[in-house]
Length: 258
Ligand SMILES: [Zn+2]
Ligand SMILES: [Zn+2]
Image (cartoon, rainbow, N blue to C red; front, side):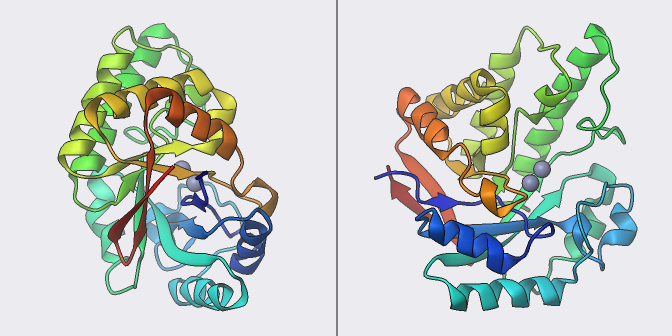
């Protein structure tokens, strides 16, 4: 079997319906939609520093649009959210999630002690290496927080920071071991696969070594990008001997065999 799910995708630049149609056209069986929590009007006051990616939504409108999309396509559309992990804001962020019928929740580190590292690019080797290590520390906290089914894009720091620390593989293994211990999946992220595949390979090796569950998500922000890099992601998984992909319904694990 090939990968026929995509558990990381965004709706704010199109719509749940358009994303679901794209998934159907690409032959997917299951689509997990996971808009950023900072795109939700209700949560915006605590996350107003995050760059908006489209018009604000409300939780009820987002959830209703996904349920409606699920009725209109043959793909099984699941309700998720990409949730920022920020140590001193987590309680306030999590309070917004209570009471909604989530299928899965993604934990994401997009900032390090206030620095949104995907949007800045001026640091030297010493600061770059320090940021990588702090990034892994936060990812481990996210994995152990109990809030999330999976933690996304664990090598995203590479986007603007080429200063890989010498102990990168040990850090990836430490993260993979923690994720396995907490039964949280780590993500093979399509955006990262397309931009720095060798780092995703190192992540996949760490997951294979520690028998860490993996999720596969395109991180599509447009319909055309749904399932982007799935072929490459699958090749990376097969190469390290990972043959299971984890997905969720009502926050319960479902796993399928490649
Ligand atoms: Zn993200
Ligand atoms: Zn995303």
